[in-house]
Length: 105
Image 1: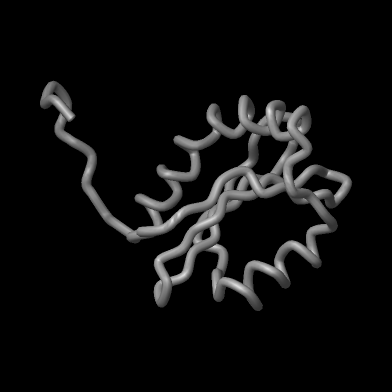
Image 2: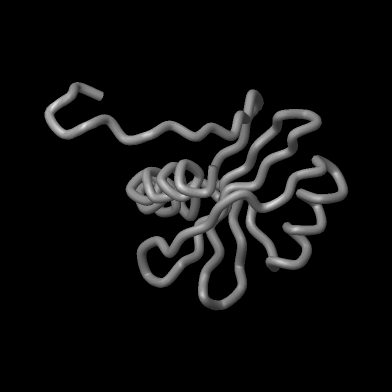
């Protein structure tokens, strides 16, 4: 399960680099990390499921709730500013083995 979630997190890396720039331009929902984390826990019951280092030493995290199946992707700057990048419904933790070399994915 960890491997799949880690791979999923890394897969969002390129998306986050582009989306973060767009979020700054569009005035994305950002705030101090503690306040954003409290909102994800208190209002949505989400906990951190995976994380990785994105561009410019920003931390990308995926939060989700098993109960509601909601999910949120955040990026936190080295200065502690956390921005909500994407969110949605239907979160499912999955473990899928990598296809054998030469097999189509």
